[in-house]
Amino acid sequence: MRWSFLAWWLLQVLAVTVAAEYWHFDLSLYSQLLSTHLTRDLVDTAFYTMSKQISTQFCDAVEVLGEEQLEPVSPVDVQILKRQLRGAVGSYIEDKLPTAWNRHDPYPLSSTSLAAFIEKTMLEYCVENNNIYDDQQHSNHTMIINNYVISNQCLDEPRDRQLLSAIDRYINTHIQRTITAMAQDEFPILLDTTQHQVTDVLTHFKRMTGCQLELEINRNQATAVHTVIEAWKQPENEALLYAIHQYAQSARVDSDS
Image (cartoon, rainbow, N blue to C red; front, side, top):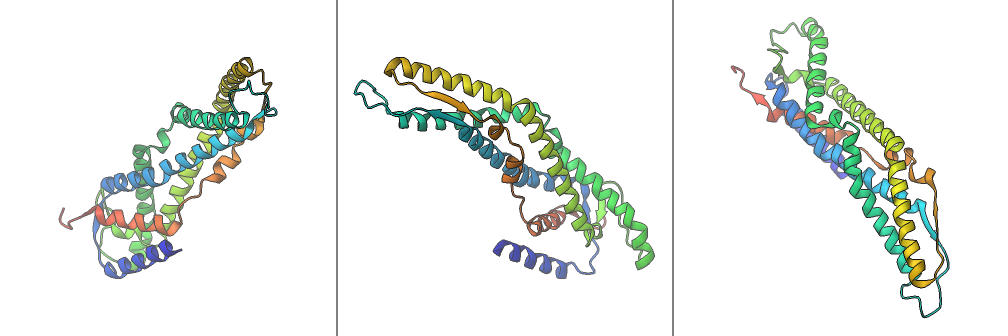
């Protein structure tokens, strides 16, 4: 809440500062700066959060059944073994997820693709509203100098929020597609491998101690997609809206450029 208020206040200050001021910014540089910010603070954070959720689901879905043996010949405490197996499963899944993610075409969520999307969307909004602006304002100010330099008014409200909504939809769509594809193609393989590895450990444990332990796996729980997606909470819109304006200032060019 505190960050939202700060972002709102900074936007108001920025609006007053540049009110009625016409300036231009380099669209290519702007798209690169904003996409880098989105990749680092949004996409990477989403992947990290969802990886933790997937790991937790796998750990919760893998259960070792059996009572602790009281015979002194048992060198390993069963409860300790269960905790160690849970930790090993979690670490194994988190270690394998980056490779699985990369196999499912992460290119749409790369900084390069996000920059191309932002640039294309910004040009569309500017062209779409250019005639409307000219009709209403009767100004000689040029909104688009060329495909690389555009007016700050291309980010006037409501265009800034339209861009924000478009970015939200783009990222959400591709994240959900990627996670859904991974759940179908990668999760079952990871689950099978996990099952084999845990079974091998339990077999060895039985030979060493005579303790009978059984492995039970809830596959539906491990591969649930909706809980993975729900685990990721997007940053508040006002914070992203501030970034949209901030990087336009960073990409500002001289009027005679």
